[in-house]
Image 1 (cartoon, rainbow, N blue to C red):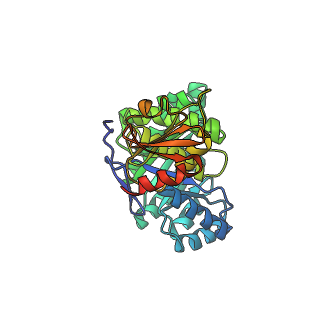
Image 2 (cartoon, rainbow, N blue to C red):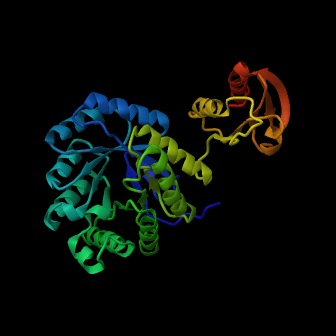
Image 3 (spheres, rainbow, N blue to C red):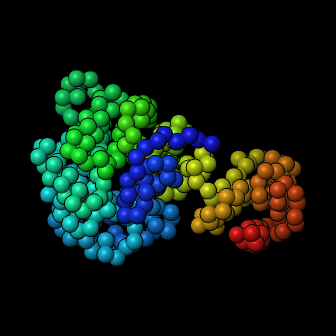
Amino acid sequence: MIQRKTTRVINVGGVLIGGGNPVVIQSMTNTKTHDAEATLAQIEALQTAGCQVVRLAVLDMEAVSAFKKIKEKTTMPLVADIHFDYRLAIASIEAGADKIRINPGNIGSKERVNAVIDAARSSKIPIRIGVNSGSLEKHLIDKYGSPCPEALAESALSWISYFEKENFGDIAVSIKASEVLTTIKACRKLAELTDVPQHIGITESGTVRSGSIRSAVGIGTLLAEGIGDTIRVSLAGDPVQEIYAAKEILKSLELMEGPVVIACPTCGRTEIDVESLAQKVETMVSGLKTPLKIAVMGCVVNGPGEAREADFGIAGGKGEGLIFVKGKPLKKVPEDKLLEELETQIRSIT
């Protein structure tokens, strides 16, 4: 059992982050925010996949107007992502944002940061302080020579201290770099020195294939050490894929309950289409909350034995397959009926 770091709690539209609450899955829409219809459709898809908080880019006042319309039509907690123009942050708060994400270093001045703090305080919503390797303050680059872990942590701690001096402690913080080790080291340092909840992830991590792996290494390492209260897997592509990756990371560390699908890597003994079956099984059980292990194995020689701990499983044979439960054979089924029979068995207990 992972021992979570003790952090304070923030409330994002009814979703509690920090304080030992379950790790929250976030994502960000990649539609144009001013296209309210398309953005709402993507938010709905993310929510169906298991996302709990969604961030929207707010680039101008047209996006603010759309944000307000979107907020009125969804139950999903929404975060307004702001860069450079503090007025957009204030307008987004007035439009109903459940949280504001800013990088204080690019807002322009502490007076403008204070204006955002005052607006968030009045509306009783939290602010996420974002620190990225690509937008680190110049004096820290001059001091350290690069956006190293020490520089990133110092920037975050400095802004945390500033917000708290302004009597605003309703904050979360994120330190993100595209380098996995840099992110891990910076987040570790931050966790040692503050109880502010951390939003963790690897920024610009890459494609669905490479980015999922790099995110799993970075996010998974931190979560295994008890660091991190909310996560986003940043991928170049459909953001729904971020939710699937995030859920698998959490389930692999037993930080989230739900079905886990395992599959053999296949070999010359394989007689069924393991890859296709495993993908279909993943889709079939994606909406379940029950903690199940489901195995898709390529042959009856090793199937039930190697996957004896699985709650349910398929072991392939020539033109047919074996359905097994807890390592024990249940029945043989024609290959084209395997998925249907497996679903029947799973649904019988869920």
